[in-house]
Length: 361
Ligand code: SF4
Image 1 (cartoon, rainbow, N blue to C red):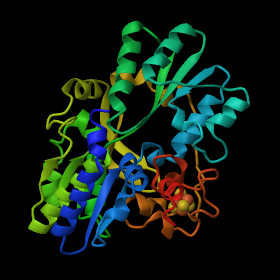
Image 2 (image 1 turned 90 degrees about the horizontal axis):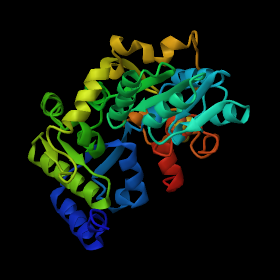
Image 3 (image 1 turned 180 degrees about the horizontal axis):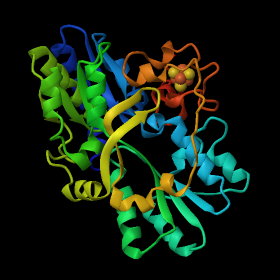
Image 4 (image 1 turned 60 degrees about the vertical axis):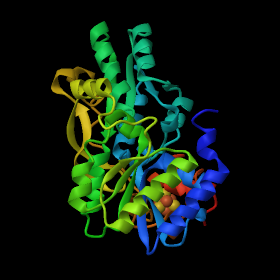
């Protein structure tokens, strides 16, 4: 398959690993931002191919993992209401809130539906004018354009029974938070190629310059990831800290301008709490005042919610690259994908789930 097979070529993989081995002279810690890349690294055994000098740590780029528990509890509260059709991507249905999940709401008679696009939720609202239809709008820059478009479309069509529960997060402020921490260990980033396909990478050079940290926009196939690692190691060894694009088949410097325009039309920046990490300034998007009618948090008074997080979970440290999943005492014991205690075991993209699935024990 074009754009897949050539990036899984075993001979090229071996050559790139050999080049990394020839280049590296001392220890380096590199963070892959995206949970999809974490899973690819585990799935293809890339971490086991690398020389011991290179340590990969796993970043906060798993949207389900970083959605705050109180936001999930709000979703559950809204989805329990008899006048509501609650819609979401499928990966949110099994994410546990403090006491239940969307599956259990549906089992108890709630109208919870999986959709493949927020625009489908707008259609459901048109077909059910006597119900309130809510879409759970979580995620990074990748999902924001479609979520913004659903609001634009609902407004244009005069659909007044549609709203979104927003929990959007952005990558650059998370990079600032990680690199600015006094405990930071990250010396280079593999940036998440799909985020950059939307946003470009024009926001990254000032961050690389401020923290003297190389960044390479990286794809998701084995050769993409190894070439991203090679480029970062070359920069680290040479004392450079630039932003390079290793995913040129999908990413440009400017990114997708129409997608960025619809995001700016509908959303504005806000402080956002990240599960396990805490509040990061300007790291989220919320609806602009002119679209406030589509804000599910305003439409439904869910009151103050106090979530109950596990006391043993160290997922916040894992999401900042300070610990590995197998350093958690609960890993694979009290905490498994069937019975997750924390953010990074909940989602299929979470680092703990990846370590569990691919047996990095
Ligand atoms: S193994 Fe479970 S409890 Fe431990 S850090 Fe991961 S999610 Fe949290």
